[in-house]
View 1: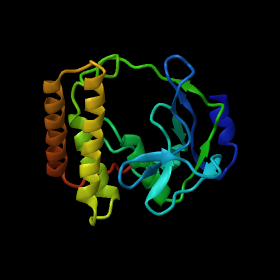
View 2 (view 1 turned 180 degrees about the vertical axis):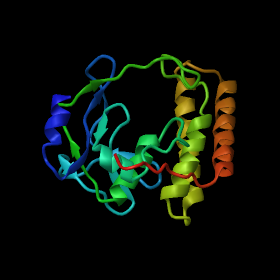
View 3 (view 1 turned 120 degrees about the vertical axis):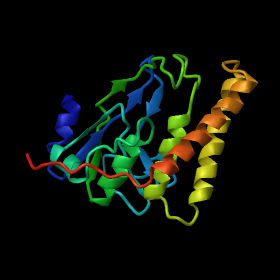
View 4 (view 1 turned 180 degrees about the horizontal axis):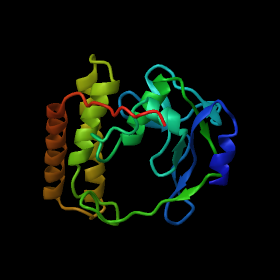
Length: 207
């Protein structure tokens, strides 16, 4: 918290993020990253300390380790509650980036992130249901990706989830039938996202 607060002493900084370590406190889950319009995350290139968005990309504040100036968060409509899980942080990052918000990476603002069991995944991170991933991917692409190439980006996202499921299969965490079930849930989420249409962001009253 002290490292996050220190980053905000720069008046130009509107968002802060930092590294996320795995449960063992050693392995790096997330570092300085960039979210792209196709819903993929890549390592941040060049200077990592303070960054602005560029066309089709924005500094990523990972959901388990991020802070924002409240007035900036209100200006862009806050978090979009259509994203029940997955890419809700990335969607916010893209909107903040479009507003010119500067994001700082605070290397000493470290979070240890363990995994709890849920309807979406087991405690060992093996997937149980990826409906929300399909839904969120569809919503993200519909808002941030150019129409030309959007279907290809969605197909690539589906391939990534299938690859992840096959890795779980190869490790013995799930069965072959589970791979087919997971991909059906992804497709169902995409259909749900398409049916939802363009979400309406919240309008916040001035404090």
